[in-house]
Amino acid sequence: MKMFKKYTTVLTTIIGSSLVLTACGGGTAPTNTGTTATPAAATAAAAKTDGPKLNFRLAETHPADYPTTIGDKKFAELVNQASGGRIKIDVFPSSQLGEEKAVIEQVQLGAIEFTRVSTGALGGFNKQYEVFSLPYIFDNDEHQWRFLESEQGTKLLDSLESSRMKGLAYYSSGARHFYTKKPVKSIADLKGLKIRVIQNKVNIDLMNALGANATPMPYGDVFNALQTGIIDAAENNYPSYFSSNHFQQAKNLILDQHQRVPEVLLISKVAWDKLSADDKALIKKAALDSVKTQKEEWAKFEKDSEAKVRAAGVTITEVSDLKPWQEAVKPVIDKYRNDYKETLEAIEKAKK
Ligand code: GTR
Image 1 (cartoon, rainbow, N blue to C red):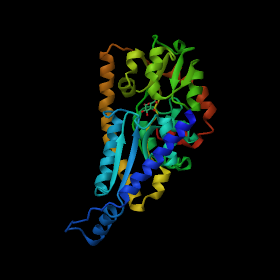
Image 2 (image 1 turned 60 degrees about the horizontal axis):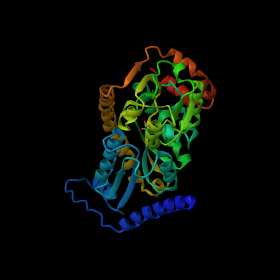
Image 3 (image 1 turned 120 degrees about the vertical axis):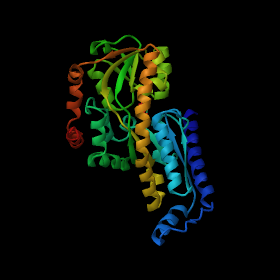
Image 4 (image 1 turned 30 degrees about the horizontal axis):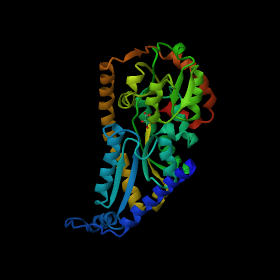
């Protein structure tokens, strides 16, 4: 019965989604009335504003004021502008369309066209993406961005095609830290704790290396799991720790910076393949252009979240020497070094 319900939901979503496309297919396209455009520019503009109207959905885990959601909205706005109002993308925040894993499955089917997800979640679908869950591979955000904008970073974005998705742009996500119900001052204190992680193999190995027990579960279940004691801890960046209210349940934060797991804005390969070359280009450009806004919002929200959790009385433990942490998790890097040789070399190169 449960299975039946699940498939009916997916089916309804697929049908619902294609109806939107069909219903909009007959819409009248706005005419290009510019008088000063050169013939070539006029043709290009007409190519963008002519043709069927398209209405898409973008699934987002975070609430409306979160930096990724603001980035998504900027992206939707830029697409709308560049297509002369012909392409409309509705952003659904707060996991309204489902938790990340379920959303990715629907994106693969083409039932949801766009989403913004963590590369951690993508690791469960595309092995190449697990590289981002390896600990301490980036020194800081600048190092990470140098890699993401490098040839190898772009190649990785494109490699999503083999998983029936098309990566459009990376977004910032800062560093992840552990937060616990009981005070944690050192690696030894993590021993035996049940820690929620995003589901992928590297995360399980990482928790094992620290002597903890990995408990994969959807992001939306973490608050209750902390409250009821199903888990002892979780880990995330400042903005997620704050906006999810996890700080109310796990009041000890240790700034160990174990991972920097970027976000990705992506489109279903099913939807991508149906687009004209012009629409593909304008969508890709809008995604890249939205990064600036997302980064600015990220910087502000990260600071703000830190201030708010400090004001709420969270116990924050600074880690002045990361070396013991890096040593403890080195077996994880060693285990995966060959699998991600090319990417890890490019990450190393991006240090300078
Ligand atoms: C956040 C990320 C979300 C989600 C969440 C999690 O940092 O922005 O997309 O992946 O972490 O831990 O599930």
